[in-house]
Each structure stands twice: as C-alpha cells, then as structure tokens.
Image (cartoon, rainbow, N blue to C red):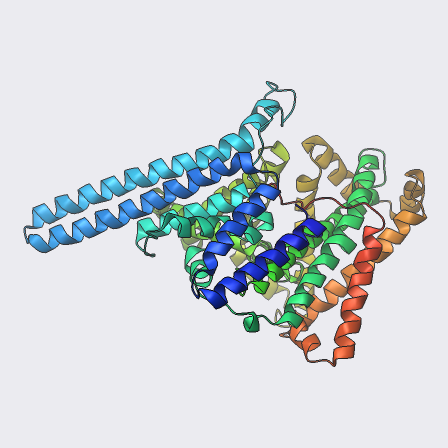
Amino acid sequence: MELLSLQFAIFLVALLAAYYAAGRLVGRGQWVVLLLGSLAFYGMAGTWKTLAFVLVAGISTWAAALAFSRLDAGLKARLGETRDRSARKEAKAVVRRRKRLALLACLALCLGTLAYLKYWNVVLFELGLASSPHGMGLLLPLGISFYTFQAISYLIDAYRGSLQAERSLPRHLIFLLYFPQLIQGPINRYGDLAPQLFSPHAPREVDLSRTLQLLLFGMLKKYAMADLLAGLITRLLAGAGDGAPGSLAIMAILLYSAQQYGDFSGGIDMVEAVSELLGIHMAPNFRRPYLSTSLADFWRRWHITLGTWMRDYVFYPLALTRPMRALGKVAGRRLGGHVGRTLPACVANVVVFLLVGLWHGAEVHYLVWGLYNGLVIASADLLRPAFDRASSLLRIDRSTRGWHAFKVVRTFAVVNVGWYFDRIYDFGASLACLRQSVLHPDFAGLPQALLALGMGKSELLQVLVAGAVALLVACVSLYEERGGDARGWLSRRPVAVRAAACAAMCLMVALSLSFDVGGGFMYANY
C-alpha cells in the first residue's frame, strides 16, 4: 500500500480517530488499537498469507525470552538455598547451557526463515539451478528484515538480562508489527519503542507544524528527487561501459547517490511523521551522511539503526571472542601494538559489512559492495599511524575548514566508488564502468553521449526539478550540521511563511507525480 494514496489516507484517518478515542475513553488501551490497525495495514498491503512468518518470529522470541526469565528466577532461588560452591557452580552451568540452547534454537528459526524466504532461490539462480531469482513464487513478508532484526535484538537483550521479558504475547507482537516501521524501518529497540507504545497519548502532544513539515520534506525527497532520477539512471547505465565515455557512468552513479538518499531518507521521514501523529518517536536513521569525513563516519550516519544493530549483536560479540583476542596478541607481538589492538576490530568490520551486503541481497555484486566497504574501513584503521606521520611530514593543519572540506569530498568519492558495485547488478559490468570512469572519463564527450541516448525535454525538466530539490536538501543538511534546527526555524516563522513553504513543497510533489515515473520504495522488500 503506497503512503501517498487515498487508501492509506483513509486508513490513517480512521486509525487516528479510533486511537485517540480509545485514549480518551479507556486510557491505556491505545496499543490494542495500534495492534489491530497494524494487522489491518498488513492485510491491506496484500501480505495476509505471510502473517504466519511474523507470528513464528514473534511467538518464538516471546516464548524464549520468558524461558530465560524463568531460568534466571529459578537459578536465583536455588542459589539462595545453598552455599555449597560446587553446587552453585553446577547450577549456573546448567542454566547457562539451557539458555544458550534456547537462544541458538530461536536464532536458527528466525534467521533460517529469513534466509529461506529472502535468499534461497537467489542462491539457486546464481548457481544456475533456477531460471529466475524469484522463481519459487514466494510472497516476501512485508518488512521481513526489519521485524526479524527487531525480534532478534529483543531475544538477545532478554538473554543478556538487559530487559524484562514481556509476558503478554499481543504486547510483544505490536512491537514487531507496528505498521510505520514495516515500510522502511527503522530497526527499533524494545527498550526505546515499547514504553511509548504502551503509554497513553493525547492529540495535544503532536506538534502538527513540525510533523507536517517532516512529512512534506520526506515526500519531496522521495517523489521530487528519487523517483524523477530512477529512470534516467537506468538509461545512463544501459549506455555506459566499454567504449562509452566514463563520464556517463560517473553521472549515473552521482545521480544514484541522490536517488538512493532521497528514496530511503525520504521514506524514513514520511513514516516518522506518521508515527509522530500517534505521539510515538522512532529511532533516528539518518544524520547527514554525505557530510561525513570518513567511510566509518558515513556508516555511523547512514541507516543508523542497522549500523548500531550490527555493532551490538555482531561486531562486539565477534571482536571480543577469545580467538579474536588471541589473534590480536599474536599480531601485536609480530607487527606492533597498533596492529595488535586494531586487527580484531578490522576482521570484525569486514565480517559485519559482508553481512550488510548479504542483508541487501545474496547476489554477488552486493557481497562485493559489502567487502569493499569493510576492507576500506579496516585499511584506514590499520594505516592510521602512517597517515598521521604523512600529515605531520607534509605539515598539514588538520584543524582547518579546508582540510575538513577535503575529507568530506574524499569520503563522498569513496562512497560513490562503492555505489558502482551496489547499483550495477552485473559485477563484470561494474568493473567495466569503473575502469572507464577512471581511465577514460572524457567529460567533453558527455553531451554527445546524452544526445545519443535520446534525452528529451521531459528528462531535462525532471533533472532540473530533482536538482532543485537536491540543492534544498544540501542547504538544510549544511544548516543542521552546524547545529541548526530547520523544522524549528520554519515553525517560528509567521503563519503565511509556513503556509507558503508547505504549498511550495506540495506543488513540487504534484509536478513530480505528473511525470508518472514513480515506483515503490527501494527498501520496501527488505
């Protein structure tokens, strides 16, 4: 179901009316309305048949977390009954073993379901054993990666004892099924989202001015930037590669940077605005990533909730394992203290980004893209002392604005090299385009190449509209990077100014929709 549709508008108005009526009449029962509304949304999205997979993840993690709680409570009671050291040690070992078995079984069920639905036929296709990556005809559950990762975070936090297990299955299910997060994410944590879901909310809590601004700005990024560029990028890449000017591929990848950011962050803005209408604030997912000063910094700003999930549940558990610590000690003795301290984290980073690539898809180009990011970040960490010495020898003042700007431009270039592997689905073609971009850019031949592709006035107008929106996004990003609050600034303007700004955004979106080039969200099936 499209967010910008009459069906969704009717659904949202009906839900808001029921939600706030329940809050006024019942008090603390609003989460029940949210659960019923989320189930209705799931059904209207055409994915009723896949609800069973959500229930598998929900029921299994709910039951396992309760089992952890009972085992911990039983252990506490037993330890209180005896002072015998060997008996206490044996009791702890038994509970630890049972909890670990329950954890592994539940993880296998959740991740196995995700892998089967999302990757199995892709693997068969890559091995030449299937005619299509979608040949099994499986209907992919809406937001499967988002709710699976949320279920796993809840499971592991319960296993670690960092949250109290939820005793009510329906209350646990609303945490997974909360409908705004199913469309685009973010990957919320139970400790942050659940208190808001189960607290009463009143309409007066909603700042309609700020929420409307966020909704319209998200629509602007999605419909007036990302969607307008999608078809053009496909045409540019179809003509790029061996024999074509490398500038054609460079232009396509730069436009893809804008498209992907507009689509993903615009979608996040829209679902966050919908959530704010319910008085619920989800986890932030973007923080001006194209102003990053390193690739590691970029990934702390882009899809923040996926990065923190990988950090907490993959990176640290892997980097702090006994084999990794042993690897660090060996490397430290042979290659120096810095390498010894850094190497375990570097290996963990490479593994994390391979998993991030796999999260995007099982195709080879996604795995290469993940490996590229992991290796660049690992190399930067390992070579940091060499970079520091080079900066000192060259007498570079790294506190200047010029050096900061250089790092931003350098990082943007490194990110865009990675986009070649992400966007160009054939690995050989991505290498060919990258080779042409570096060795034969031929910017003088770009106009002729564009004419040969049949670029008309309509495409030119689309690029101009998208470019204007991209410039606005860049200005807002720069303002907020310096500590400003764009929504707060506009909210303090006179009503006439706010109305004019909202009207201008609406007109831009309407103009963009008139081109009829839109599509769904890029991350909708993740």
